[in-house]
Length: 143
Image 1: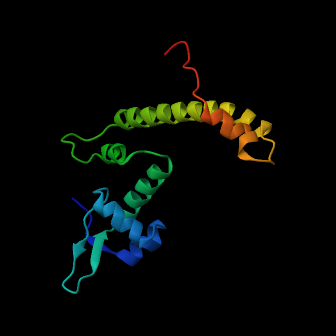
Image 2: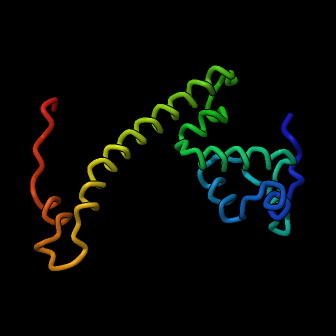
Image 3: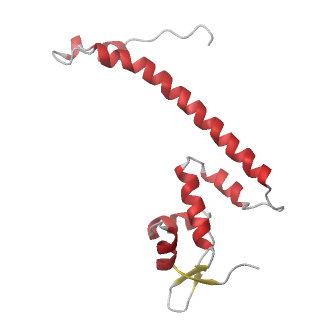
């Protein structure tokens, strides 16, 4: 049985540490429960909604895309999620992070010598960064 909608937006902000605009954004994305509207227009959330808001915020901080967060919350599923389901989603995210880190390390390795070789003075015609980035680069042999 779902928790009663007894938590005001202000109370949800206080309990979760997430500002009201962000909570409204989570609502628009369908990541949290729709608030119940009172006759005077106040929004009331389930008493346990702060945990869900915190989960969404922390998941976004870890770079999880919205569809993966929906998946972990079990939204749109007919059967309950298992720990193994969440593990698979988190493992996929970790793989994505590791791929992005490898890409960033490659970019760093390419840019670092350009920055180090820059004369830092004179015209753009003498700038090694501009000159290098202006030339087509050869394609790696494995492409």
